[in-house]
Length: 323
Ligand code: COA
Image (cartoon, rainbow, N blue to C red; front, side, top):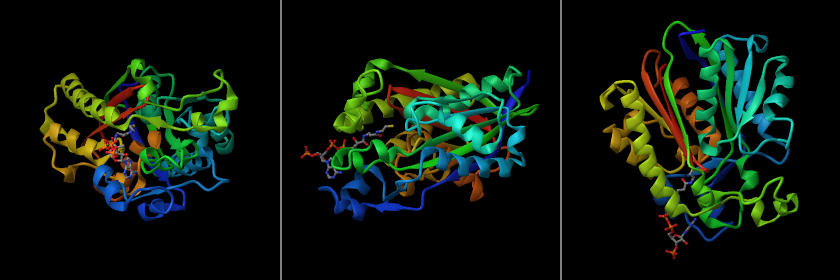
């Protein structure tokens, strides 16, 4: 048993190829002005044809291990949150485990779409606090561009690829204070890829193998739900809005992020924003934003950080920690 699970290192990776709003203007009937005003996105990174989710996850994981001063042999749990695994099976976590040479420990993927990293963090925290693991690699990684319909202007402007990772270790000091995970499957049709394995793999090659979304309705539910989970998280820890030093939100849309910041009474200077540079990288977005702000020196040891996410399912969740 351990009192706390604490992040001891962060890492991330973005594919080299960049797709700007100007590039998208040449692909579909859209404009930089529309995308910027409605979403805040300016550009996103796209995995090359021979680059997989595991490739992105591996670099992010190695960077997180290096930051934590750990080697792969010390890792005793690997969880990857992804919607775009390399293979139907084995899990991308198993593929990564082999590359790292960390064999023997449990390794599995978690599917909660854009909330995946928060789910994975919540699961890893429970492994560590129960004494089942001491040093976990928790990763969000996506080659999300593979399931985007590049002829659908209402979705293709939103998403990007990338990976973020943390090393989570047993600790006597805080640490994660609490994680909060939720889902409501009744909303499944508002944001989904409508086909899968048991439903007929032959559909995968067509439009049914790509993201479909009712953006307006997703937007409304996301804003309300994230407002509620912020309150739930603060109440569970007896904290006030003013106790939060940093908000690290899921990076889907700047207007959703601003609405959550308003609810918290937080100045946007205390909110980590990468959506302009990365777009929505689904499960990778929160750990990518966290690593960005840790590496550029904004988030410091001892500060209180609130992470939250919302995604297909619907799923939503939060994690609050002393960094
Ligand atoms: N370029 C130009 N015009 C576009 C466009 C694009 N890329 N995409 C849609 N439009 C058009 C629509 O066709 C519509 O035109 P119409 O009024 O002639 O019918 C108009 O813009 C408004 O569309 P609407 O969907 O109402 O826009 P919106 O203000 O809701 O913004 C989103 C659209 C997708 C940016 C917004 O709904 C959103 O961000 N939703 C949440 C999505 C999300 O975060 N998903 C992931 C959650 S994890």
